[in-house]
Image (cartoon, rainbow, N blue to C red; front, side, top):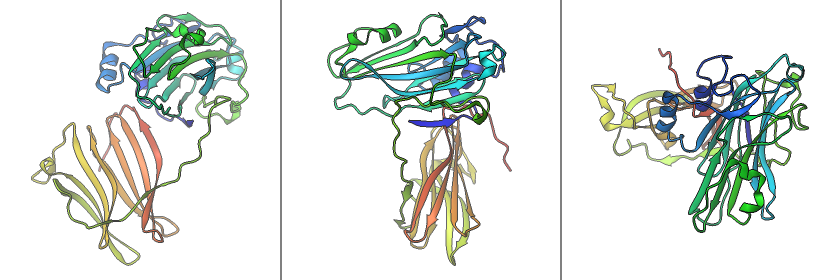
Length: 369
């Protein structure tokens, strides 16, 4: 399970908090519990614009004074018809929450991905975010049904409150479901994939929780007790490609020449031919960009994508151990990614690693030279 701390709010959290600081979350009115977040028309429009409205849902919560933390738990139904936890995370207030001095109100945002992984964000005393592992199915899904928590539900400590229920199958059409079907797993046994997401208010932290003194910004991820731990992925390798000709349909827009190990290099930004007029860049909603590092022997493709409302950039630099780096900044409407490519002379390849990688963010603007 991927896990990471949020330092800025993602798109769903931005919509949920709306820049209101500690103002009361709509739909809660200060009562302990959880319920659907009352989205404004503008919020609905933004989600629809990014194709997230049908597969995303926002919930508002207010913790009871006795609660010390909030947990989001993700489950999958096994072949025996029993729930198995596949992910989980939370935020913990510690003694401030348990004593009633740190009552927390905030939001839980869920997004169902096409690969059947589930992304969730928890915003409140701190902001935590995580994503479960993708699920690979043997058969093509031909029918599915999804249900969300529809009404506000009062909170009770250590009680699982189902907020989402999803069923997928390769057979005939499925009947409609409700979030409460979480309590009737036997009814859905035998399908290709059944998932559920619950929220639980806790008086005591779980065994896997980080201690309060280790928290950043007041919140952190708690890993579910049965969450799978994947092996760390090997760095992506970018090999040398023969030739340095301008790609078909593209034109060179910017170039940065440099020397490395007594050899001439070029860091080049190519754009679609019709995007340049009199040396000026003409942006549209589907602008194509290509960034390559080139030398006499050939080139390395470091970025190639169609970007909505954004212009990628790259920096070339040498570190203190005389290693060549090219850092690509992919900043657009809903993405903020910084990826570092380090050159390996022995393999004649670049190794890539993400330094910052956010999807679904709300880009505000930039100050540029």
